[in-house]
Length: 252
Image 1 (cartoon, rainbow, N blue to C red):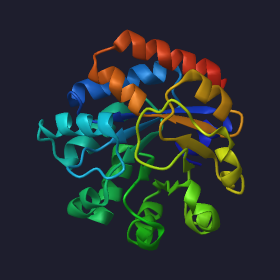
Image 2: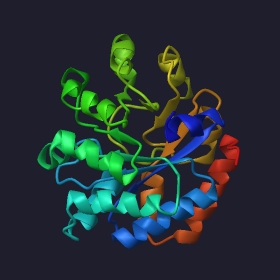
Image 3: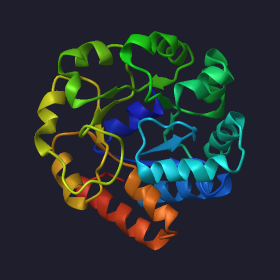
């Protein structure tokens, strides 16, 4: 039983994404611990990449800021190890394929497990190429979390067969980023998924969370959190997260 499995067994889960290393690793460490205190159940840590094909503007800018620090992949894995000494919150790494390849696929998952990581999302790897990563994740006890899109209808079962932890259900087409409206009927596409379902991409309003929380096991907030951090709006971020936790009905 993984930490991710445990948190979903308790009820609805608020998941937040932050870019590791923006503005620096110490701030990332502090933010993870603060998010846990506020009621966040899982934190996704983005590893910055120079060509982030799935990311919208705010996350791209965060990645650019982080890249200027010249951290290596090992520095991000060491950050997870540091967090794990103070917290048992599930940590999911979102990394692009080239980052994992360059570190060494088996070595990456072995090190992620040793550091205390729980899951991985590799957004630029389609199902047809997932065998280059998923078996290594499984061998080292790391949950391999796929993304499924509204266009995945006939492929959902195939994509999620090798998944564990939860499935990342994309709320709309396109890249990440704050959106004014979300199609709340999107859940019907994802109903056949047996693993816990978390919905993300564009969720930025409390009303989004209230409505989607009726149909999904978890809600993912990314760009909204990153924008708060970009603008140094710490109090505003904390207020929003508290409201999101309440709207989702998270059990503390």
